Image (cartoon, rainbow, N blue to C red; front, side, top):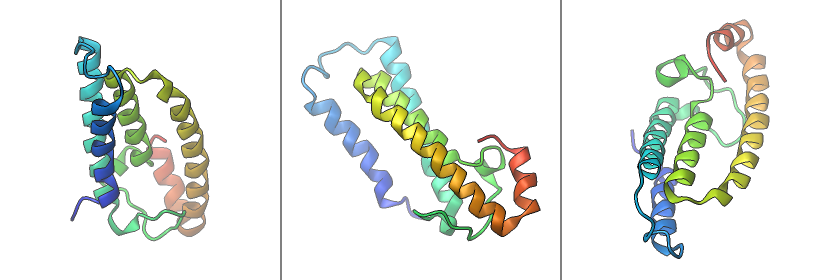
Length: 139
């Protein structure tokens, strides 16, 4: 499977922020910044893994093509949402862009609304199978 093109946007945006936000490159790489970078990179690779595991079931609008329950989806119902959040937090800490907490909170709210809509669509299509899966997983 190929890495989805939109996923390549994330590292490009981070690099642009790093190189073009005034004063960002001059800040020292403290332990906290390094930890933030590690969290952001881990979140990014886990996001890519979740997207690849979702395969053809991925869609922009809520659809019930197939109930994916393997890989990261065996433990987390919405790993893409979780790891985008992890990645975002890592970027905030690594780049000291604390103003990004405002859109981050908005992102979390939108993800909760979206995950609720997706759950309804999946429950309609897969019924009891989805409810059992839901009880065995987090978010």
